[in-house]
Image (cartoon, rainbow over all chains, first blue to last red):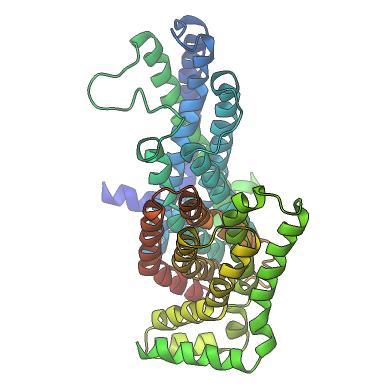
Length: 244
Length: 222
């Protein structure tokens, strides 16, 4: 197990591993997202209160969950990069930031589209919305900082520190609906005991949630491959790869 | 501890030799707040309502202006490198830089905040006390969080707008709770909740960020 792990941490074997795994992730993500979105948008029953508008959750919830998970992943990669100086963890930080920023923007936009008919306003200055917006700014800050450095390793170290410090915001986003009186509703699926959502609505949601995670995983692997190629462009194995 | 005191004394000595630069942050703060008052309708009661956020954003921008130079000069003249070679812990030096930055920018802003708040029509008495207590907790946070971001960008010669872009989202909670306390006091409510939250943020960043800033500065040499 450990030797496999160590081998994976070397850029060329990671590159080959990602090449093998990413297509499978893409196919699985496509199937799950296809089923989840189709079943969610056409088959699942209407909500008794929100009507068809509730169907936004099949996009909004996966996007919001990923916005937090990817930031957490980025901060963990930051810790690993700073402590063990593993190059792949450095690549992971800069690879995850744009993906996380996209999902955060998607969560904000879908939330706004749902907020207009439900709350009567696209935007309210409320704890959940504000902290999610701050999360987007943190992602953009990491991307901006990464672009500002010429040296890739210095960029990754600075981004790692910023990602770790910004991670304070993650629990604030997650628990904002419980700590403050928020207009945003509390979670219906991720809680202990019986979920307060019917299975016909929940199963497509789980499918699209899993599909979105696999999609993000695939995107992360591909971005990391690009970053590895960029960093190792003078190494022998990259020259062999590109010579073909 | 001695590295801390030596750094504070050094920063104050440098500042004392360039007295005009000491006046710039409070002057900037006063001008920004005055422009808000000038931009509004004369005698508008709305001005008192937005006074907390105007004062907080003004203080934030005034502190930001000086952050870019916090470590830049020390990196250029080699002082920073000497500190990292020295046997004393560089964390004491970083803490000293943060403390000196607060003494030279945060404290003058705090002293100026009361007259500016009254100028905007903010009620005197207890609400003003809560506003100042919030600023007393919040201005050190501006120095600490901002100093961390300044350490991250120290090796970038033209960081420009990058520094504010990094700092402002991290400081959003400070502005929210700082002006939240003042607004609660203005409305006659208990303002201690947001103040406790500011105190929590201050303790959290005081215990973590000097180390993070030290790591960021060290990587500027590698």
